Image (cartoon, rainbow over the protein chains, first blue to last red):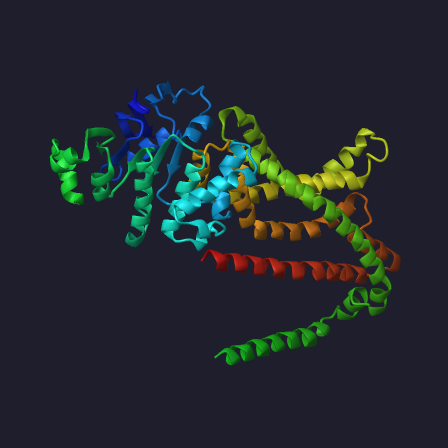
Length: 242
Length: 259
């Protein structure tokens, strides 16, 4: 059984149909990269997976259980699915470590001192041990994004969603964030990425999906998608970005 | 360049002041006005009493301000309620704001201050201090709520999304992520309202409490002279002018921090 399974999901904003019957299976421990032009539905799909947007039709199964059921409490589901955003979205009035500890303190109902060792270990692991008491505006973009990843990891999620997490970074800072993603993959984290980093997708993804007009037009291992795309539109897209 | 503009500013100010000092006394009614409004003897006789009466204003202000801050926040939160089940709360917040921002403060003070004790409440529940306070708190909370709401709406949606995606409840998102940022952002705007409140407290005198404005009126009748009103105005200015300057500086500092 797939860890996360998207079944024929439809979503529109007003008259604009963003997702048009999209289906996708994500196995446990897999890294799935979503590629496609801006507006093809990548971000919307991720927001639906995290229940930030309700779907209009279709189902999303997490471990076989439909999480789009309106009677279901969305909070426990969101705790199992972490999300990292393009623009970091750190809370500017809190230090890095407070950003990370907020959700565990409120949800796992543990004290700061009980949670601190785990948070310190995460900061140390991603090279930010000396940045814990800095405020977001005292950190570089790459550091902020790594803190945002730590913040999501602190809830011990089973799946992580990454929405173009390197797009807002200086090219020089992209590497340090991609290193974090590689480390998480090595650890066996289940990950879904919307990305424009084609080289990274080619190197690290287990599966690449090409989204076009709210559907997955083509999916497969990176070698197949990047070297021998079957669809004309995939070929045209790759010709533009590669 | 700078010295030149300072010189021009000084010269033009001196010119205007000289014109006022020389021309106003030439008006036909000046002598009567001078006696009625600028009587030094009356001023010094009544000023200490006015300052004492001002303590009543300060007292009323001091207990109104925290109540307004609290009630205003509750109304703002009611107006921000998003779930469909909470629609009545949102509607209530909307009506509350429309009503209390639409009616002049003095009218609310009359209606509440005379109307409710008119129900025949026993002492001390018929005190004009209580109902005057209620009227002022109700009115000002509507304005403060609107300021808070502007602050809440000024926080980018992505902050809410990030907090929600961590699994925090709606209330936790509000309490720990949105409100701390929103309230900080609207402090200057709320300080402006506090300065206005400081003056409007004087309106309570219309339903009984002998505070500064009322005391000045008493002296006026007693001495048949308007100078106590001038004294009262000076006392208000002594508080509001420094407070306004301070708020201006807060705003300037905040603008500087944001750019």
